[in-house]
Amino acid sequence: MCGIIGYTGSGARSVAPILVRGLGRLEYRGYDSAGIAVQTEDRIDTRKLAGRVPDLQALIARQPAPGFCGIAHTRWATHGPPTTRNAHPHADCGERLALVHNGIIENADALRAALERAGHTFRTETDTETLAHLIEDAPGDTLEARVITALEDVVGTYGLAVISADDPQKIVVARQGSPVLLGIGDGEYFVASDAAAILEYTRSIVHLDDGDIAVLTPGGYHVIDRESHVLLREVNDVTWDLEAIELNGYAHFMQKEISEQPETVRATLRGRLVFDEGVARLNGLNLTPADCAAIRHITIVACGTSWHSGLVGRHILESLTQIPVTVEYASEYRYRRPIPLPGTLTIAISQSGETADTLEAMRAARALGSRVIGLVNVVGSTIARECDGGIYLHAGPEIGVASTKAFTSQIVALALLGVYLGRERGLSLEQRQDIVCGLAQLPALVARALALEPEIKLLAQEFAEVRNALYLGRGVNFPVALEGALKLKEISYIHAEGYPAAEMKHGPIALIDDEMPVVFVAPHDEVYPKVVSNMQEVKARGGRIVAITTEGNGDLGTLVRHQLRVPQTVPLLSPIITVIPLQLLAYHIAVLRGCDVDRPRNLAKSVTVE
Ligand code: G6P
Image (cartoon, rainbow, N blue to C red):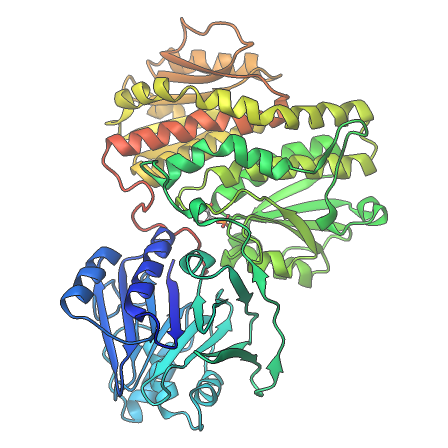
């Protein structure tokens, strides 16, 4: 979704190249237009367009915007179509100030009507423009005072950066419900919606909290509240390297992230397994044995791929802890008026830690008295900071919009949690050691599954032109079927559905003919013979079957068109292996179809609006 970067410095470097490079680093979030505003001696120069960051760069090359302080934005349209006019930054009537905004101003229509009645002229259809006119009219000696006053009238969410021609070299930042952080350099300061935008210049970052206002000048920065009291905010170091957000020879981030999985799975496990005791060390959970004993019910809230890992997690947690688990779409949970159940532990799963629906579902659960833990990848993200405890995935930045390595690391984290809680709930040493050893072997097994890539590339050629596909699985591998279908539709725009294999008879079987590819996720487990029967049903109707199966299973040669054999693991952990060929298949089909794999149309990496 929308991205923000801003910079102020004492004059050693020009701002425009820094802003454009930063926007380039934010491209992965998904956007449709981009722009910058730079303070010159006595005015603000804005360059913006509907299009990509390289187009913006070319525009700036033709019409330079010199200066040392500025703000920039990539927009993912919500209010008003993705046109040049609607691209940020937005200005007030006199074009004395410019601002960029992530989030949604919920009372924009009412504010706009009042501002128009007061004589303001709007140039765009965006909700954001109301902020510029509100600040224009707001009283105050300084830009920050005016911003604070203007925000009193605003209902909604924002991560906001404002510059004014009358307050040289200053950026005012405000946060309410939309992530924004500061970057601390030497005589230069940054604001960004995401550390990736500024990592090339500084590793020192300050996460802002809701309600914070920050003021940046080349001489320093400070954070204040709405009464102008100075607040102390911790400076943190980004722990990953620039390399993690570069392609390093791969054609796409998605391909890089799929390939990284032996290492990312290892990173999620690092330092957390104790073999002889069969336990998982999870210090960040903040759960005492008494807390564990008090859990009666687990609710998982998540969206998208994280919801799929939650479905896998239900099998793992119920099996290891004997605690009933429900898995909810975060967006549905929060409006469903869930009934409070005493002893509920809520688990929020989110790669980004910023998904608005998951964050709000977690807040709703907490309001009902539940303890909340987060399974989050991005360190310092809002969900990570608001939960009572959690497990960081440590999978490194995930740039490809279609989530891959986060999914496998989320399942690893859920299995660690299962072992942790299981120990407190009577899971035997032998059972725990079985999972712990299974987890330890995963990085090598994932690497073996990745070795199927040449075979999958050939298979992709056969399926690149199909219009529909069906993915089927059972038990713990039913969510893998959902995830395989999601990957295909997200990046190749082929309609794909995931279904429980046996449920197929109650509807989707009507779709099967000799055109229809049917992908079965069928590792060696207790439901395998049943899944083979489901394959017979598809074969009898001419469907083109691809089976993801395990090395221990018999030959399916007479039944299926293609079989991809992945290594065997503990059945509960099998989704971490069976999903790998599905990720690769979706990737190679999308590449063959000429799709923009890392920036699929209409999708955003981090969905920070409801
Ligand atoms: C977006 C992304 C998905 C992701 C989902 C949840 O839709 O495109 O890949 O699974 O958000 O994101 P989260 O960061 O909460 O895991």
